[in-house]
Image 1 (cartoon, chains in turn red, green):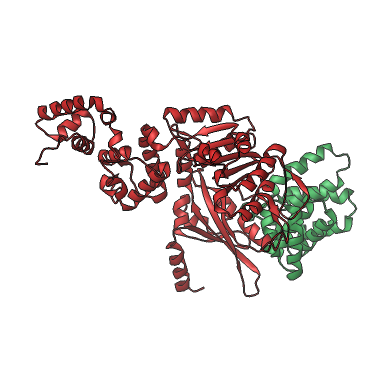
Image 2: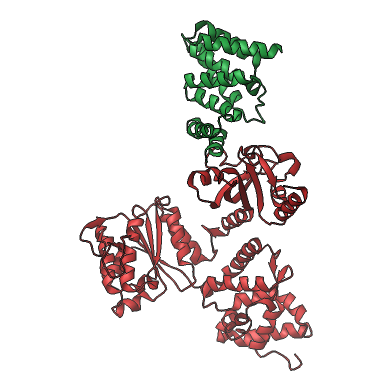
Length: 449
Length: 145
């Protein structure tokens, strides 16, 4: 390669955001790009010609080397997780891609390894483990603390669990936490959403089928219960399951047996069942849409997840959690939220619960260019919801008997501060927007405002 | 895949896996001395001493410096890691004939004097007297020159 060509290649490599190095067939480094130098604190001149294992000291160097894997299988490697070492000795989590370089005769003459620094993901994992969360679930409200205690109490149990809660309350995260703390946490964990399959397909998904069992059964299929054997299965949206299927599920729960579609051989499995629904299960039972016997089998350990509006004191913690999450994922340096935005978030009804809150923060992140999230950047559905939907947030508004006293109290403070809202907000330790909404609800906005 | 995969197994010290790959590389090009150097160590580590000595002899007759000039870091030579365990075996062995051969071969990668000492001992007690005599003669000539 001539000098111009070499410089061009190096420029191209240096322009990449991913770290990259190449080795010859002896596994000596023969090129490295700028991103790799930065991630590991290296200098190109110091590493060229040295063995890659001496430089990166990866946990895979003496075992499952990604280039070795490509040589053995003939398939390129993508997104292999591993750790490599910074020159300071610090371990850096990475995701690695690898491929082989060949000559004209298709003989390997070297390899190329590219990698992404996944340190930010580790930070996020640490964040999830922080004091305010339980297995990644943020919640300090009494109702959530009780659920966390219940999950810990049942950690040794193999009993079925039924999780009830509105959409977006985090039923799957609760199921994950139960599985993670159970003795089956290293065994298979299979999830299925019962609402997304038509009846015939759901039977096939859950129990499997043999070739020719139905028109499209062109090959044998292993069902989710087989896959989950010795482990756990999470049946989401269980109330959507057709009645006929409920009978089959009941049999698995009672006897641990089932047959694949089109097969007469009875199969036996040992699976712990966690089920969830956002439906009102009482109504479904009354309407005959859900079998009593299955309900009692599943409802051994019931967990009722509160809606977010029923645990508003968790909203600030959740907001901070999502700010931290999106800061790490988006590389935007946003660390806080202003009072007005927090007031709006705390007073909104959240029909979509935690999922809707997460989406709202993500939306605001996308729109924010400064270091603080402001109310103006919140989704219109939340900004426009006030004050009607937010009315219940204020204690005095839920108690009409005390309304007169509240009006009088707020008016006194307003007059004392000559209707200067900033001073009043400060005295009441609330945001100016909150004060404005209180004044509006109580009819205390003067005409000039 | 042979040579590169063989090199990889050698780096990972998976000598048994490296052997078929490096042998295949030699069938493609019999004059790759660095492959032969590695293969000698692989044979020793998998206790295939006949093969090790034969290949070692081939290299020495061609040029002893191929092995003598080995740099343990830059050539990723495993001898500093593996020699202590072989030497330890000496104190437990009542008939260390083969061990003399092994140590004579391995020490030539990092300590010429010790290698000669062990090769001479091997020459006194081993079955491969003529082969070892030729090796010692070649080494002697090569170094005196």
